Amino acid sequence: MQKKFMVAMASAVVFVFATSAFAVGPGKTVEFEKGGKVIFDGKAHASAKCNECHPTIFKMKKGADVMTMKDMEAGKYCGICHNGTKAFGVKDASNCIKCHKK
Image (cartoon, rainbow, N blue to C red; front, side, top):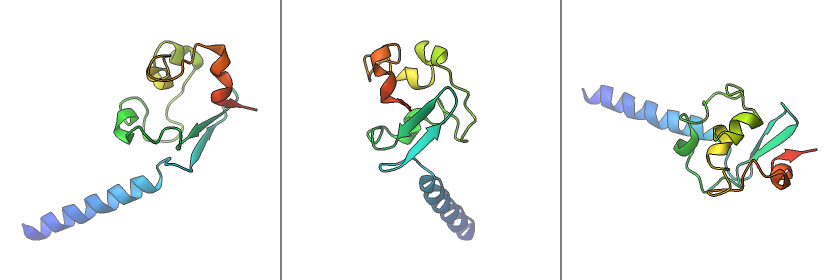
């Protein structure tokens, strides 16, 4: 029994460190190319906890979510927080350059 517990705990520790190694933390970015270059900046989102967005809003696999501006404007994906209240709104054209880069 104790051996199974120790194996389970060791597996959990390995899992936590392995998944955090792939996280987009401060100083890291992820680029999306569909619809123009969009950069997700880990530093700008450092105050959010991973489980606030994963896996309920975004899937854990890179490229698994197919996001559109129409979806975001409807309050899905990034638009859940970027609604003009919690964070700058995706519907305001003056905010486009905050995510879309040339």
